[in-house]
Image 1: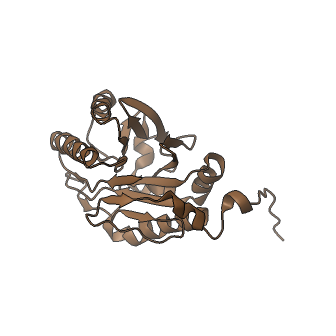
Image 2: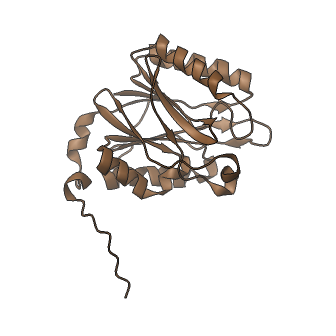
Image 3: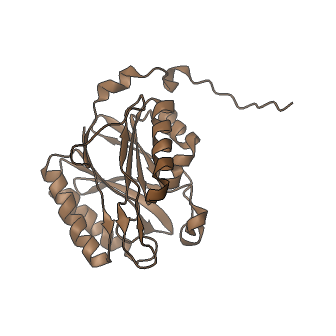
Length: 246
């Protein structure tokens, strides 16, 4: 699977909408099977974007490029931080961020989601993760065991000064579940009051080895690597609910 991970810089909303469409179009024309944009990349925390306006754009872009699947980061809809997945003008599924990040005031902006989500893309099953969700290994493990995901796709609004944490968590989720882990983070924000440098994009194979991209955006995932895992939770997981505390 050929994957394009955006390195989006969040500016004013009109500029974001123009640059977003141009990048999505170019990525699809370059043959990306999967095109991923980061969390809240169009509006950040404070700008308003009507969900219906965003959805019209998502539908048009995915209709124009029916061979590509698009993960459009996240928008604010129904008081949820909502990631949506599109192909051929149709929404394949959505995921509402479960683990909101209180230090950034997210509990005042959004309500937490109440379920995990995965989506099938070609012969891959992708588990959907948003930013601070990556801190909770039980979410990744549930996606691996219950949906038998081949990869996790994590979108984020994560600062560069904490990139070492972001990278470590992505690698850990890959190794402990024996699957690919893709992290797509906003490159920067220049919105007044939200100016910061974003963390890097990272991709790890099922052994936790980093995949490189010559252009920092395009990655090639080989499903045969899933056969190389040392410990496969699908085969060795033991479900224990009892905890003895002596």
